[in-house]
Length: 220
Image 1 (cartoon, rainbow, N blue to C red):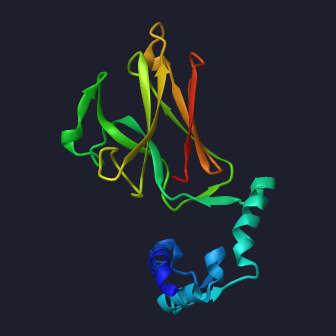
Image 2 (tube, rainbow, N blue to C red; image 1 turned 90 degrees about the horizontal axis):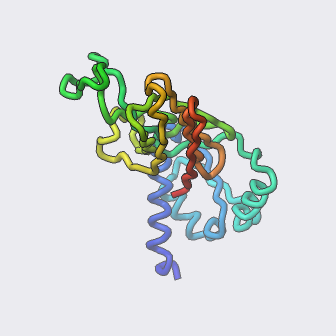
Image 3 (cartoon, rainbow, N blue to C red; image 1 turned 180 degrees about the vertical axis):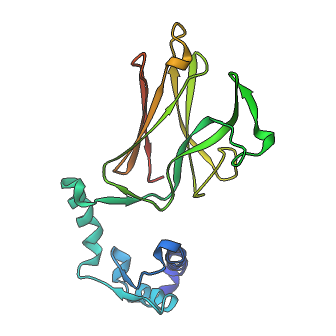
């Protein structure tokens, strides 16, 4: 019978080991097992063998714990006060050139100023604790009639460019700017709204009032 579940249990144990090895998890000494699998003595034995220095607790009705938690969250979302972000999120920007930050070959003359393209402007970093209601706003200036607001994520903590390996394009907002107003006088404010299982992103041209938004699933 145990052989039927060998592969699944091995993958689960490996996943737990990978999580425990993360820097923010190294001080964990107690693991609470929930879910249907948690009631299996075989699963408990395999986890304990893989993590002999950790104390395991299997609460009563472990199989119902996940369901109860989902129901509680549905009725009272603020029962969870913080969420640990599992990626670094941000947008692509054209940044002013800084000699101590960017290599010389990245330097370009853009709209009369020395700048660098494809810079990853960070909103939140991987493994940060984000409050249930969290808003982070970036302000950029348009350079032409339309502005593409590109949203990226990566497992890296401090990505410098959106072109580095591991950066993933999540979505795009297209803003239409007013050509009758100097682009230097227009601001585009892009706000990231965290808090639940989704990431809401809204961009607004503060001069024209135009708003574009999208919603991204953080669980994927």
